[in-house]
Length: 72
Figure: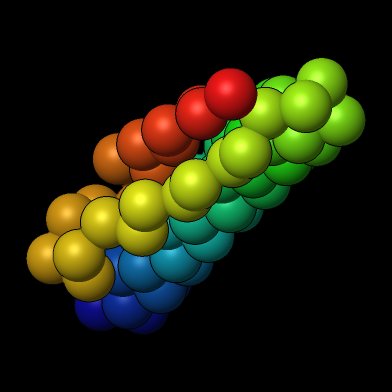
């Protein structure tokens, strides 16, 4: 009985750690993408382009990129 309880706790802890790692990985990927987007916008705006950022509706997932229109 005690072993089953211990195994259950360990299993729940592994699930929690896995979910935490996956969230950290998603957060890092989002930060990396944000850094890339910021660099692209900075380069475009410093090259004389007018940068228009069109924000997606909230219904879209965070993984969807933000479309950018560049006008000269």
